[in-house]
Length: 156
Image 1: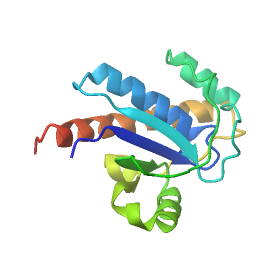
Image 2 (image 1 turned 90 degrees about the horizontal axis):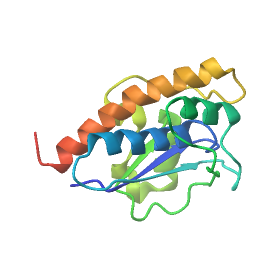
Image 3 (image 1 turned 90 degrees about the vertical axis):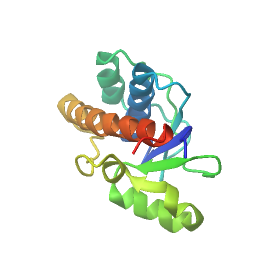
């Protein structure tokens, strides 16, 4: 199945999932696989309309990505998403409990990527914590891009 729409989910949708969504969009653009990938983010306990954390914006700016326009949103309907990635196993488990009919499309990011582990929440931490999170996200998301490309092209 060719994946064309991905949702990344964390807790508040102000740090990890917006960073992950922005990075996945950029990595996908660079990979130029020949088809479009829509990438969204949301939070399990998000309050709607909050901006991304200042340090998340700063870390993405270092990578040439503008996160200043991001506004948080809670997880809503999963209809239309081919793949839903929680940044931790706890997010995955909460999503599968809430959306049991979509369980086969819901994974933890590290689980789907086959790289790394759960990513701790840098909220309220120093810039270095956000930089470490972004670095781990890049590693996991590069593996996600490779898997989506491989499976979408029918390669083994």
